[in-house]
Amino acid sequence: MKKQFLHNLNNAADTHPLLERRRPMMSEINVTPFVDVMLVLLVVFMVTAPLMEHSVDVQLPQTSAKAKEAVDVPTISLKNNKRIYWNQEELATLIMLDARLDEYLSKSKDGGVNLRADRSLEYGFVVRVLAKVKGKGVQKIGMITEPEA
Image (cartoon, rainbow, N blue to C red; front, side, top):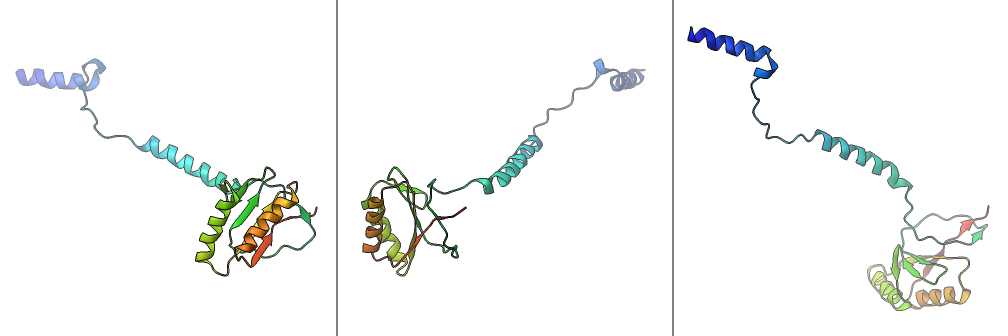
């Protein structure tokens, strides 16, 4: 009889929601939502990364000269507010440009540089920077311009 009562009680727990047995707590972390969010972010960054331009904003002069093949050399950019950039890193003074040129030339003896100067920049400032670069011994200086429209 006691056995029958326990059997009936077990059957009632299976069918009645109020008599339902409690499940043990799950101690595992569900990482599926985390992985979903990370995959979405990965796709977003993969799509937007090529669209980002990683150069200093300079209004280049236009010229009708044909474009040359790109060479992997550092670029000195001069903005219209007379700020100097070595690749994308801002340099405070011409003295810092000196130091950067010394460091570059110690690694690459026959290396050249590219110069990007804003078209509204004072001509004398561009000449001073060119003289500094030439004075350090850089033999190849490329002038970056925009093609005429």
